[in-house]
Amino acid sequence: MKARVGILVFPGTNSEEETLRACEAVGLDARLLHWTASSQQVRAFDAYVLSGGFAYEDRVRAGAIAARDRLMEGVREGAAEEKLVLGICNGAQILLEAGLAPDFDGQALPQAGFTRNIPGGRFRSTHVHVKLAIAPSRCAITASLQSESVVPAWASHGEGRLAADAYVLERMRAHGHLAFLYCDREGGTAGEVVPNGSALGVAAVTNRTGNVLAIMPHPERDAWTFMHPEEYGSRADMLAPSGGIELFKSFAAALR
Amino acid sequence: MKTCVIEIALTIPDNEAYTALTTLQRLGAVISDLQRADVWRFEAEDGYETALIDRVRTLETMYNPNKHEMRVRDRDGREPGEVWIDDLGHDEIERPVVISGRELPGVVRAVRYMGWRLFVSEGRPAPTEVVRSAVATLLCHPAFQRAII
Image 1 (tube, rainbow over the protein chains, first blue to last red):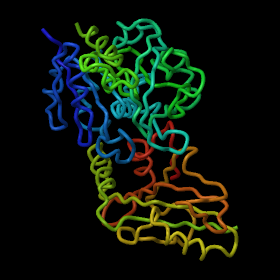
Image 2: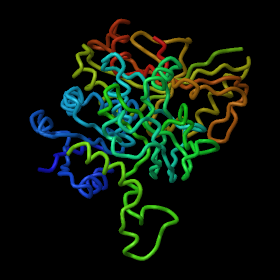
Image 3: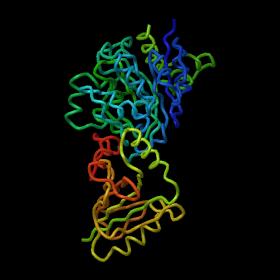
């Protein structure tokens, strides 16, 4: 039986369809889960994906209102039961706002956040690569990736810079919460590879128990070759899977 | 040096403030209203206050007369029931203070705050402990924002 994955949709979410397609492509039974869903409907899923967009129009802050939405109560309960939770872009902002990552000391409060890009706070849409910076098994969602895997994705955000105070950052580094770092296509982290000024070049954060992953750039937008720059070929080639799908394969493998 | 505080608030319905109000109420805050305004705090050289205010009135990215009202506050600091939130390292501009490509005359420093004003009932400002609780619950992200209560 296929694992059931709920793709959360808040007012203003806009990446649910491509996230759904990526989940279905790796064999998951993915369904859209709207903000009007009952708690019982939320609990029925084996895992959750929070997709990108502008939930609640980014009112107050990106992800702030959605993180406190009733729908998130079920996700929070699921995360506590070690169900998998993947947040992409705005979904990642929501997870950090909800305190589900890095999740020190079991506090349901934000300890780190994704905030305005540097320089200038400008929105950036650019192709990036991210490198797995923890042991694959540290996070269930990355457990089937190779060590130091490089995953292509699209950064598409104005508020993707990881920010936390120095103590929290050091704690995140020391305890393996910094799941992915921005890199070049060969995996090098030197040079101008970070699109947003993120602290320590971080692109993704996991939680204490490794069942929650908050990733800023969009792997689902580089899931097929036609989405990937520089690799256009024949029509058949363009519909072949691309590197971003690897993260979804690993996510699906963890649900088997 | 003179400090000039200018408040710019929407005259049309403020959906963001309404969403914040209903979210806080759902999370247990006992408040009846929540208002939001951009609060600009300028430090300007003596004699430039009038020129500064006139310039702000012409900058439509700050003040659009079709949907904003502008008020020059008669004193510095928060009003009762109010908190100012700014993003650390982002909302402060040192001389030359250029907004929308135009320099503000005589201004040596400007800080833009999000001013939230909370009310408990019938226009009565919320006490400090209620404001503090709303800040911790929703209005300020401790990792990258600062709240001045």
